[in-house]
Length: 192
Image 1 (cartoon, rainbow, N blue to C red):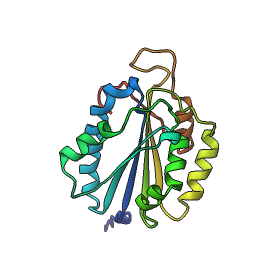
Image 2 (image 1 turned 30 degrees about the horizontal axis):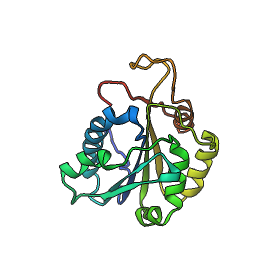
Image 3 (image 1 turned 60 degrees about the horizontal axis):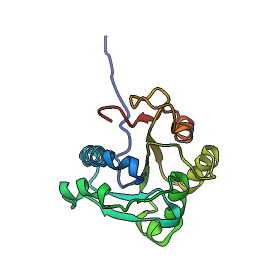
């Protein structure tokens, strides 16, 4: 008896752009170290797939949009750990609006590489507050990245969060990642 075992190897990741959209309001300042540690761990994982990647960080305020980056394989661990705290404090928490505004801006067009896969992180301890619905944002992302792979990760406060709060649930972020067939990550979990 002959048994043939085979598998199809997924295409090697060639280029990856990672955009971290970070709530920099006062209530988030104690989360910057977790964000920095998580992105540095992610970077290590990405480097096992490709060295052609870049990270960019933006605030969630489309009217006072700030960008830090790009960080790539030549960036030090200290660069990655400092990145979240280098963004200025802002008041608005409009992750969808900030992402749209950035990717349509001159800086965003310079950051975004046309052939690169795209990974979007939306990180906030409150709900998304722009006028853009999760459905509309999902449709825009699919149109914007129709020629490349893309994905979204939301790290936000959930209804049964370990934070113990009953307000500021990240409902729109949850709706968005549910459209991708995933669940959001609780920002108050010990290790996300």
